[in-house]
Amino acid sequence: MGELQGRVEWVGDNELLIRGTDGMAYDIGVDEQTRLYLKGEPVTGLREYREGDEVRVSYGDGPGGLVAHLVDGVPGAGAELPRQEEPAPREGRERPESSSGSLR
Image 1 (spheres, helix red, strand yellow):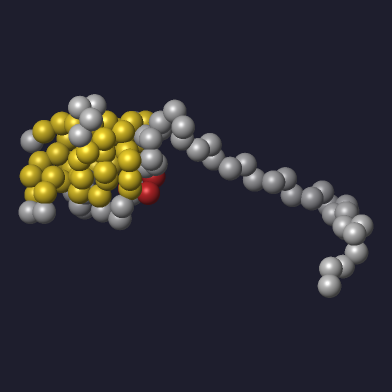
Image 2 (cartoon, helix red, strand yellow):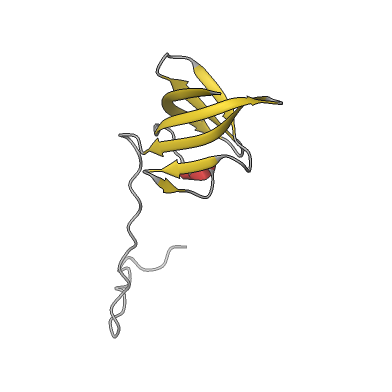
């Protein structure tokens, strides 16, 4: 069993590509036994991780290469902020129509 720290470079359906602090790229697989965390909270899948997130991974050898036992991450400095929803129009008020007329 090994441990790795680095930055997420790519997220696949069942694997992460991580650039370790040693500068090497590691392709780490995940399976149904892998425990996934982000900011200390459990997450449901790899799609919760983004490029640039910092991760700590404990792993072992699997039939196809390295397989993660635990992935624990924090959002990277360039992580996207969640989009804020636009406020709904107030009741009784209509949205203003465009004054440019219809396009043909």
